Image (cartoon, rainbow, N blue to C red; front, top):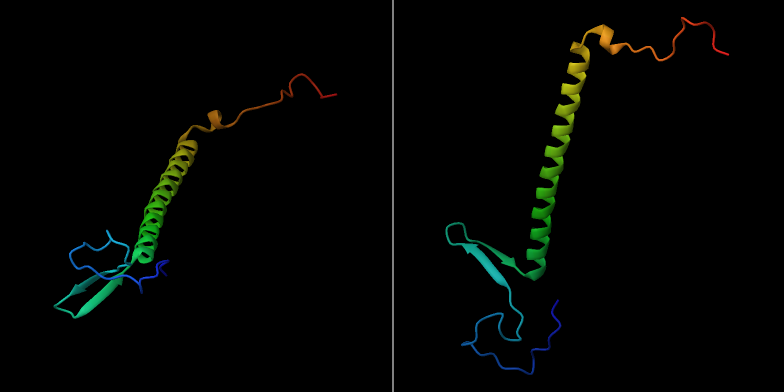
Length: 99
């Protein structure tokens, strides 16, 4: 998981974690429930990735709903229009037969 060989080094407690060459993990816990979670770099990246996908899914869902509502409004306005405006004659048949 880590690319460091820490066997030949000595640990100094006065140096803050993450600023020296030693690997470290963050542990989150609750004293009330006796639960603890180890959160390392890879878990943080995976969590951020999931959160980003949730945001993208929400944006796409909002876009899809807006498109759906727009299409329903367009369909209703098409049906509400008078029938004479909905019918357009593209070829005149008054002048005879097409050759």
